[in-house]
Image (cartoon, rainbow, N blue to C red; front, side):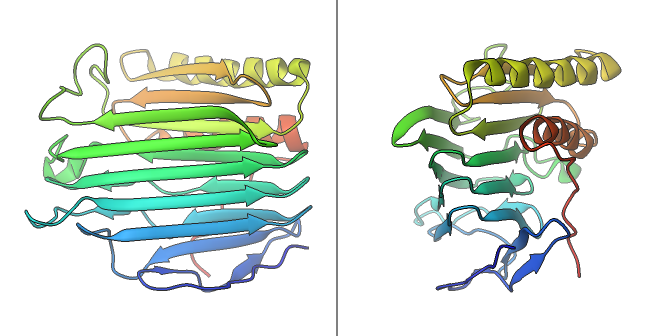
Length: 268
């Protein structure tokens, strides 16, 4: 059994408590009581999973980045997760939605000790698609860093500036609008285990792509230098994203943990 201990928190992020799940892990909902992120906001999240702990952290809804005042600096989100020996973290936030004129810098860092497992994803939307705000934000700088036993295995940097670099360029998103990233890692995994996981997730990506066609979604899978696999997808519509993520998540969870995945409840 894993217990959630909230040591310190300030608005706008709010965690009510950890909900115990059937397998003994703790489900934590990270909510934003202000409804979104504004220019000049500096939000910092730190979580530590002790040895053998198992937690699932998700958001209560999409993260909305609003247009800042002209004089306001860009919004900044910094998240740091430390996983003790044999700990398991499933970090499953909802989509990041930048509104017209938004500026954001986000950095997410994971540090894993031996035997720790990380399953995480992120979804980047083009803006408020229903309102016609496609790629009308000003800038998004996104960084993801992962280290295992003190050695960095991933340093991923993304820069989106629609006014300078067209997202529709062939070297960018081309005709796709949404970008999805899924990462599965077990610290200390043998190379044969990593290759098996890569083949499993690549097969899932190929199956998903065949279902809708390459014009609707495109998937690619790669092994990290050690310990795990990264999957990235580009899609024209957001409608298939939940089922696609659950498919990848379930395949990785079965391969690494020997258990099927169950989506977290959003209300209690």
